[in-house]
Image (cartoon, rainbow, N blue to C red):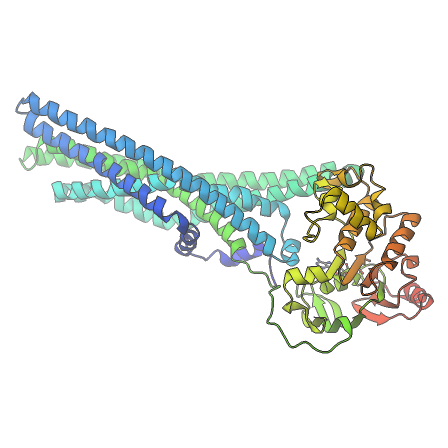
Length: 586
Ligand SMILES: Nc1ncnc2c1ncn2[C@@H]1O[C@H](COP(=O)(O)OP(=O)(O)OP(=O)(O)O)[C@@H](O)[C@H]1O
């Protein structure tokens, strides 16, 4: 299945803003009440501000021209009261929307992060971590900015414009229509250019993701970069990503700002129309000075928000481009779903491969028609040249991936019918590259182990002793409390493998896979691990992947894995000669 987000995005570019907006509103449906309250605040605010010019016009014509200053004072006080209420509603709207924006950011980041936790290994194979981080951090923030800062202004501007437009047309239809004609040009101009502006912003966000991926890759591999003196190479790569970002940012900036001067020009045209046509109407007695004062104010109330809308529209397009990138993740589904429970077959095999084929990306088949049987309590070894398919086979046993064809059976049932919890309880996997989290040795060996998660240090020490793991724990100076730092650079690779080993053994799985799990461990400690494995429950099935043949001398069965095919190797000596003769993967 294709999980590459940057390829998906090309396909999904056709998605309309309307569809994207609908999905976004579904996500924030919990905020409906606050959104309504904020909307009421904005309506009151805009309504009051719109009434102002009408009252001023009325004051000019009724009281100022007739010199009734008492009336001027009363209307002045009414206007002041209205403006004060408008101030309070303005504050309320900012407060409500700020909260909505931040809560939405929180919900969205959680939703994206939780989705990432659901997605299969293939997704992470096909996407760069830096780009994903940029989506979780940067793109969600673009939406937050729009929601907390721009949305209400956006709605406020539209309400003010509609209200001002209504007054302009109702006071004098001919003059109103002439005043509004430049707005038609503006709307057409905006509609035509918007998709182009959104595309430019999407390109810019993509380049931010690319730059972030570049930074993440070089930070993760800084030791190799320094050891191989590749700093210049990475500097160049970063420079290219940065240049791309610079170019797309300029492109997006130009697109985003194209509206401002055009809107400004057309606003001036509209004001000119009001003055020239308005004065003409006064001269022929069809209009009053007071109404012209109101008219100029309404013209400003109409075109100022329109100018603001130019900037807000840009912010909307940026937010929508960000939302597209976020929703690409949210819309993905894992292809490792749980299938319906099936009839259990009577089988003495704990795990079985039946005619299994597998390819990572549909292009090249990696495993061809594999048939394997792992019985309860036995030890199996997978050997073979580098790139032959051993780790891939192990990954299918633990369902990191599903077979492209054929079936993997666990306890006589399709492995896909087990819940992830059940499966991981039954199958333990010590990966080739063990990963440790920041915390103590205790935190790390209890990772994902619900059985002992509340055990005290003393209880845990006893459990470790019973599992014959105490000699391994003794290797760490401060035992269970030894600190592991981020990236776990304060302990050796061999020590990391020991922690991963303890973590897996303590879970007491029915099937334990060791993928080169002792490759970095000295011979004495390796013998210790071997004796621990021998003392595991007689029910435990072991699958050991190893390059060093001494590691597998106790195996009941040895399989030779080469060029995606698996065959029984017989004795250790047969395995050795197969290895020596074994073809390498071309
Ligand atoms: N994530 C992946 N995406 C695409 N191809 C992959 C991926 N992982 C492995 N492969 C390919 O699958 C083939 C088998 O790799 P695998 O890791 O299973 O070999 P292996 O026998 O375990 O090798 P080693 O002894 O080096 O660990 C190789 O050709 C490899 O390039």
